[in-house]
Length: 274
Image (cartoon, rainbow, N blue to C red; front, top):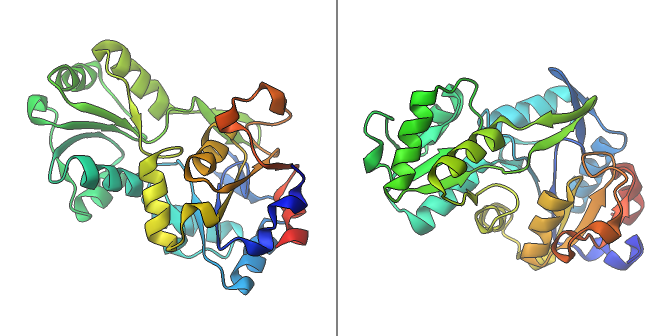
């Protein structure tokens, strides 16, 4: 389907990816993609809401927003969504008040505690209803074993993302969260449930934040298995940006659930249709 058939002028809200779409990372440096600032400015001027949904989970959403602002993007704290928010939607729906054994950074832990999530220590994992894997810098084998035993006792395994990598300026950046999730899934024979992109929890979070039905949204990102899949789950219009992880892959090789409505080489190409 050609881009003009998407009628982006009729879209009521937008969900955009960060890494590989709006920005690229090179080490600790964040570089804005050509046209990204202008795309966000054009959306702002139209009066339509947008959210930047990143599967990054090593820091609270406001920290990601600050990082994007420092790089040159006009983004408010509330316009950034991450799995640290969508996991709360899943817990509210399926484990209200439940105990969570987390694999997170200290800043992510503080964010979840402040949000009212009931976190438990790994010394008594049998009482954990959920094991939640986000980004973790240091993990020990005793911690892994205790979490696996919590899963064997009936706990649910949640992960912010199960994608093996995301786009960096110098090639794929491997996901520590996916590595950790895979280890726990193997040890416990429990299938992980994604609560970041793509998931129903992520769609619930987007709907709540934007106040727009997902079928009236456009989802724009560089990963067919995450961004496009999220949009397809919600009935949204989907645009794959080739500046990131999916690169020059053939659309014919994608599953139907991951096949976008349109493809652009970079976000700057969207300016004519906003």
